[in-house]
Image (cartoon, rainbow, N blue to C red; front, side, top):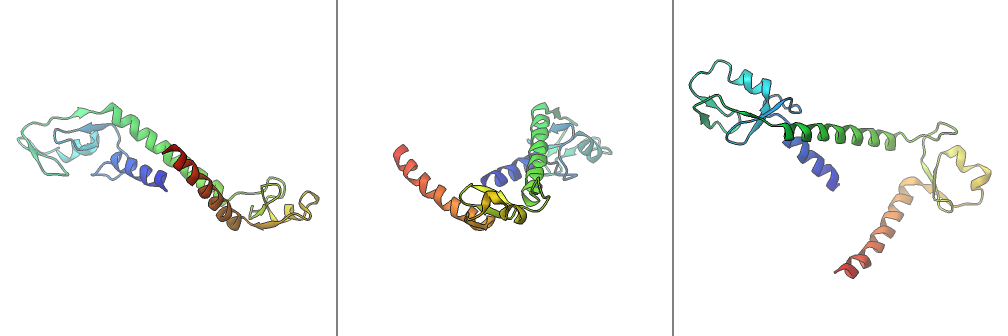
Length: 156
């Protein structure tokens, strides 16, 4: 869950407050707020002597901003992380058995394998304890948590 929160924070920092999309050709103005170059340019288009920040409304006497290549790089990273997360989430939600093309919904406790219904009846899993994958995940999470606690105390 921490990754999701961190990704959301990163996406927020890499979003333009005008168009609400990822920053394109980011620029920073003197108050520290960031915008897409085109969004800020359009926002200041008809102004001549005072240029307000679209976020904090602080006025600047000059039409002045600086390109922000580091923020451009961070924006690209945020996009890639979002794509990877979305792809992984889809794969997890739609995990299919390569052999039978059925959803993987079961878990073989002996072999520590996720299975489709068809595979659970195969000779390789006869007489093995098979349970729903969510039940197995809950069980293994508890084991991991109980294993981590002693390690934490050893580190301290």
